[in-house]
Length: 142
Image (cartoon, rainbow, N blue to C red):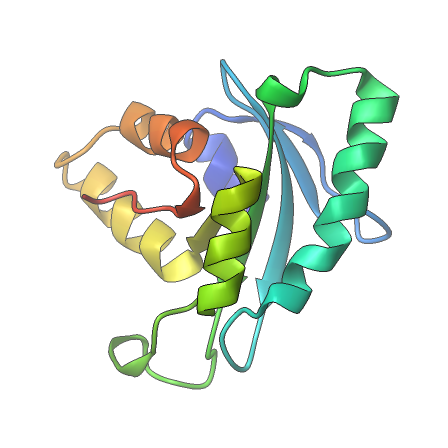
């Protein structure tokens, strides 16, 4: 994930296994990302750790809440062919993310967006703007 975001010109701040999975920045936002590989879809439980990270990051960095965005990045239903997978996020997870202004991104959506960047159908900047602006389920290839 770190390499993909670097290729999109996001600045990687940290990637650790003991606390926050990934912190990166675009021109306008700092993101705290939880990266998960899941057998099923992403349920609301997957957001719980992110609550604490948000508070910790605001305390540590004294960043404005408007410039900080949390992002759950998931590769769901890993053992199922991509074309046969269901919606990657449970409805309650989507509702909570929208309420909190957080983003939900499937690795499959990111993969399709990168294919479109490679074929020059969209540019990197469009992906970064979508990450910054969209809440709930992020659609990079509208």
